[in-house]
Length: 88
Image 1: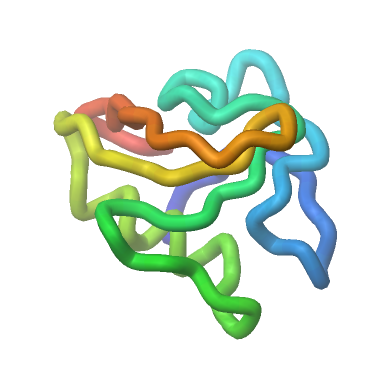
Image 2: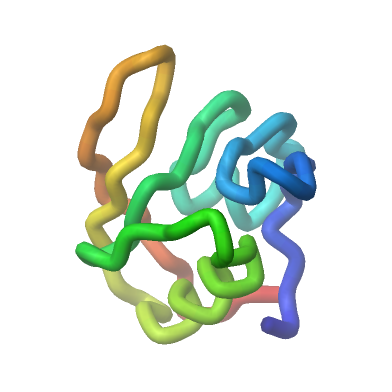
């Protein structure tokens, strides 16, 4: 997708954020260590999807806020991710 999120994850659990670097794109848009990304703008991620699919979707929301459903601290919640005008 042409940019780095700044996260570490497991190959088998692509959407679980094992570590979110600081500073990083992930931290800047509102993702935290321990989060599991469930969906972005209503598109639920499946086991066959990769974090690259998520990154490609992020690029289509440059300069906007987008709704994401995540699991944080054991609770499913909806958050707004603020996507910067550029992703590097």
